[in-house]
Length: 84
Image 1 (cartoon, helix red, strand yellow):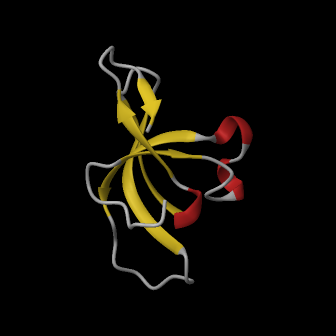
Image 2: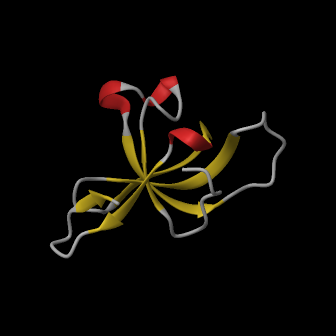
Image 3: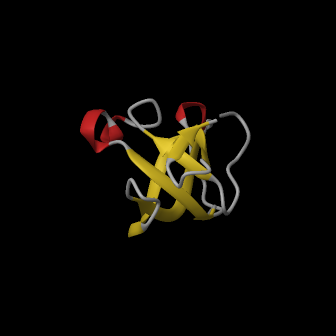
């Protein structure tokens, strides 16, 4: 993902975005805000909700990730989450 995420965007956050989300620590994330904080080039702060496999919010988090490593997702018609 090269464009900045916006509130409402659904993302898969894994080890490509930051080593802290590698392997079984990957998560599905719904963006609620993009804080305006100084970062290194190519990195971004995001505030949002971690979603479970049904798309329900389980935790609110603020994460620091590489833009290029974010994977946009879309909600499927059956309620499951799919990579776009």
